[in-house]
Each structure stands twice: as C-alpha cells, then as structure tokens.
Image 1 (tube, one colour):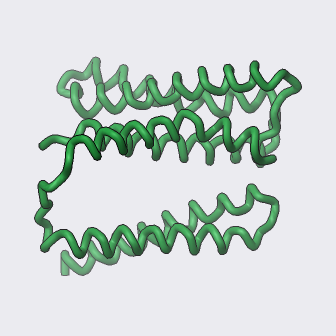
Image 2: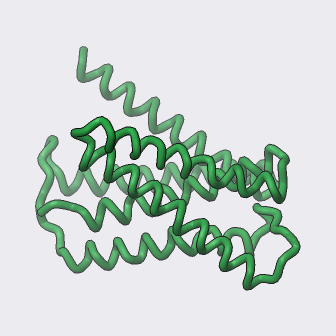
Length: 190
C-alpha cells in the first residue's frame, strides 16, 4: 500500500509539474501554445523516464560518469542560465524592456542574473552543505528570500501588470532550473 501511494504521489506531481510549465505557453500570446508546451515537457519527461529505467535496476545508481563530460555539461548549463534572460528579453516580447540602450539592458540583465544565481547557489550551499548550524541556515534562507524578490522588484519598475511580473518569474524559474542542474553536475560525488 505504501508503494502504491508513493507511485500515485509521483504521477500527480509529474502532472502538476507539466501543467505549471505548460502555462508558459501563455506568454507567447497564443493560448494554443499551452498544448505545445505541455507536449514538449511530457515528451522530455518520458525520455528522461525511459533513459533512467534502461540504465538503472530498481533503485541502484550506476557510477559510470565521465568527469569531463559532467564539467562540460555544467559549464554549458551555467552559461545558458546566465544568457537565457537576455535571449528571452531581446528576442521575444515576453518581457517589456525599459527605454534604454541595448548595451545598458544587456549589462543590467547580466549583473542581475549573476547576482540572482549567486544568491540561490549560496542559499543551497548554506542550507544543504553547511546547514548544521542555525546561523548558516538562517543566512541561507534570507539569501533565498532576497533572490526570490529580485525579479519582481526589478519588473515593478518597468511593467507592473500581472502578466509582466509573471513572465519574469517564469524566466527566473528557467534560470533557477538551469543553474541548479549545473551545480548538481559540477558537485556530483564520485
């Protein structure tokens, strides 16, 4: 019974995850893109599931990973995390940009993205790795709260609509996922 409940929780969690990510299709301005996003994330989840199922038996993790490949993957993911907000902001109409020069916008976005990633990774380090003391955990949670407020505060100066602030948080979520996966690849124990 406990195993069945665990599987049900996993399936419900996956459905909620795909539903939330498919809402990103709304930022394109066409509601039908929600279905395209849902299909994409469902396909990616299926590929990950089949890959893990083929390479693992029961709950055993195979330790066949090349350190160089992990490092290159971590660097690529981190670069994507840093560049993604600029690409999304400059190549689409997802985020309304202020009336500034492109160089100023790029510099500002680079700086804010690096500060955001640094605060999140600092929070993870202080909470998970150095969390045996209360002061480290408190500092970690405070830095995480500050990082979570940065996108909304910056967007409130440019576009205070729920769509504008929501769009910047979707971009922040993508940056967070990329940065966390880069950190996981880099810090993986052999």
